[in-house]
Image 1 (spheres, rainbow, N blue to C red):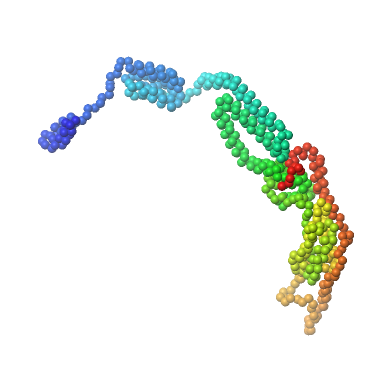
Image 2 (image 1 turned 90 degrees about the vertical axis):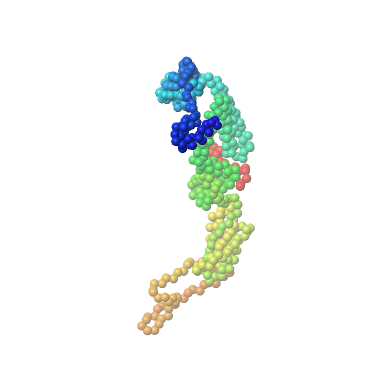
Length: 468
């Protein structure tokens, strides 16, 4: 090696002297390594042994059974067909695994033909597998049915669930949930017994996706169902209660079902309101508190004594037998109008003994008569109309002028406002005071509830439970 290095260093020097080119070429040839030669000789019968061994290997691999190998001087040629690209690459890799193989010519083609016999044979194999699984599948089916029947048996104890739950609607919900859980549990156990774990996961995953999609699609229905459950638990009203929902729907309650609240309007019409609207809306219940206040306004002349009129109105309300003394009635001066002073009359009644509308109507009539008998005027609005272009205000009374202009007739003098005189408070006998409660709508509701019969099973209103 040292000699080679010295020759390499001496090559440039020899090239610089005369006749040194030949010497330098000799030095380069001595310094270059000798090339490796490929083995050209093979052992006798090696090609036949490689071909035979590859044939044996391919014959034992189903996907390579159609591959035919041949070997010549260490070069393996593969021909035939294979089912896919992976099998073609696998055959080439097997051939390259022999030490005596120099290279591989891969001429394998992918088999795209349809073998009806093989397909029928596959179907026959599957049928045979199913036939062998019949005993296990039958046992799994029996177990699933047994678990489902156990759930139905537990759910059949209706008296127990009615006792535990606050109402029949919630009891039915629990019963349905128990049945569903046990049926699903039976299916899961049966699939696990036959080894269909992947199928079980796919079924559960698909059920979850379908349930989510149905939840979005039936959002309003689900919301209404939940609202029905909450209303049945809270019991915001009773049957025949006079309610107003969202300030627009007024009537008396007939029943609360699992889908809607049914009321009878004051005009005698049936109105079904979705429970989701009732649950989210405002509920005004007139029946909950038997005491209810009515109110109305009357106006007296601006020249009259407003305080005396107010005192007379309060005494008049106190003398009415249907007006409660506790809370006491009241009359307020609310505003001064263009031609009158407005008085607001307020009184309380007991709705169990007096009808609200009747009491208000009778009170207005009695108060009006009392004010008029005492000398108080209840004036109408007064308006003045002008039909000329002058800006000066015309006097109430025109006086004739001298000259060519004719004198106008004097206007009649205004009537002085009567001074309020002390008048006795009118007795209730002066005006009809029959205010006995006669609610025909409430009677219709009771008749319908009595005649509904079996439909009452769908009524979620429970008089035994406290009202929210």
